[in-house]
Image (cartoon, rainbow, N blue to C red; front, side, top):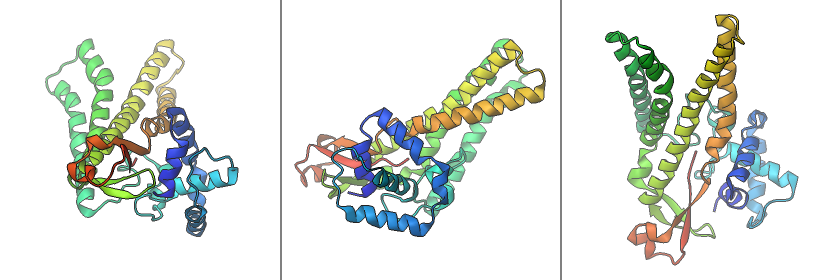
Length: 280
């Protein structure tokens, strides 16, 4: 099993553990590490032979794993380009760490364009039919965008990672031995990731809008420019806080019961639980 996944198995059992780890992995300073330093760190971890059955006590080893988690793809063992590493995450990015082919890039662009059009439809509909009542304004401008944005974010993840539905992903036993490729494990991984992305963007839109409403009511911001600055600060703060929350919702090293897998995998192992890389 890859060193990154072994680390997640040992250190990311609970939501709180995963949250603290992601808070460290998302440190922007990790983007400054050179490729040579990343390769040396990775080689050190691979040669250490640790089973990681218990949480790591050595701070130096833990820092090495954080650098590996933030910079190396666990499936391909390649260094992730700087702009696509978790610490460089931006809302416009496609699913993180995912090795995109040309077809998936076109799928992603199409999904984003489609999501943008769907998101604009309620406002266009309201303006086209001059629906200006206070209730309509509340629903279209305040209540509807958050769940719609969350749904479209989940849709984009599902489209870009569609090959995992079609081709499946590798599943491993407790020792890290690959026992097969499972479409059901791929489906589970994509669903979990899509749900976490929906929570991230839906909450990031809803909470700032709600907080801004109370700021307006309390008249803390005296001018439109001050209100815009407050809104931008709230969006940035909520996104920064929700990112590790979203990534921590599900284990990075996912588990799936043997009985939930395909018959050909059932016949190749006696393990009751198997593991897979969920992706982010």
